[in-house]
Amino acid sequence: MPTNPFDRRDFLRLSALTMGASQIPALAQAAQATPAAASAAADATQPAAGPPVKPIGYAAVGLGTISGIFSRACAKSQTAKITAVVTGHPDTKGKQYAERYGFPETSIYTYEQYDKLRDNKDVDAVYIGLPNSMHKEYTIRAAQLGKHVLCEKPMAISSAECRQMIDVCKAADRKLMIAYRVHYEPAHVQGRQMIQSGAIGQVQSFEGSYGFNAGAGQWRLTRQYAGGGPLVDVGIYLLNEARWITGEEPTGFTAQAATRDTSGRFAEVEQTLTFSVKFPSGIVGTFNTSYGSDMPGYLRIHGDKGSLQYSPAYDYNGVHLMGLGRNTTDILTPRTVDQFQLEAEHFANCIRTNTDPLTGGDEGLKDVLAMEAIYKAAGTPMGVTKKS
Image 1 (cartoon, rainbow, N blue to C red):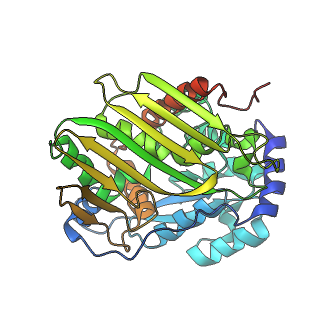
Image 2 (image 1 turned 135 degrees about the vertical axis):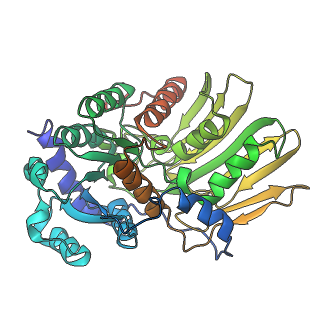
């Protein structure tokens, strides 16, 4: 049985009012193809050469903006497909998805019917595209139903919840992957390889920003569902990539949270957050994230022999990696490369070959631990308990 049905019903009422309002504007510009960079990441998601394989079937849980993007990505894949949905709108969205993606209406489930996924042999895994505070419940229940789980980031709204998710999936012998699409994006993969091979010398620091202007009424502005502000939604990209590139976990944290808006839009979460982290090696990073400003995502990595910049860094396509100063690096991912398709196919291949995903539950837990420390430094707790 659902552990928190009241919250789910509240969310359905809220989402009905704000449908479509949460999509971040696309900022990428037209891109030139870089086939080598694109194929390197794509190859890692594909099964070994041989006869055609049956696609891994995903049930999309929650049909908001992000699930729509993921589902359209699966429609382009030969190894992953949408075979069911779980939605509070079975007669509208549910039927639209069934028609669009070619699965029977018997594979449309409400949240109250979630446990029936157990008997659907066409569903190998679930894709959790729900608000943050619902990730734990629907991940745990899916694993207990025998389904693998691809969960959107942030993994959960506390490190304790993350550990529960990891433990249950492990006990059920089900795979858990967190949807860090950047880890499968060709320019980001190639940039990390360059940095780790010494292309800019010894890394000294990171700087970056990512934010957007969040309209009133979105679930992400409600602590009950989000567990935090822009850090858990878009600032997490900056934090995660710094961790990913360095291979280290931050141990020093400073942060300042601020809200200038007086309309009440940010009554429950901060409008803007600036934070700094220090890694054990001495590498430092300073980042800004906001729900009150359209901040095109960028990330700069400075080494003692050069610097690189991703800009745009976190758009859904057209990521651009360039050198700064004398560095002539210029890598542009083709706009036709779909990050969501790459992550869906990677997890599908992991399920098929019984291998661990590159971004498993431990990766999600480490981000949440760092975000808890950042919010503590800012004097604003992460989770559902509001600061008094």
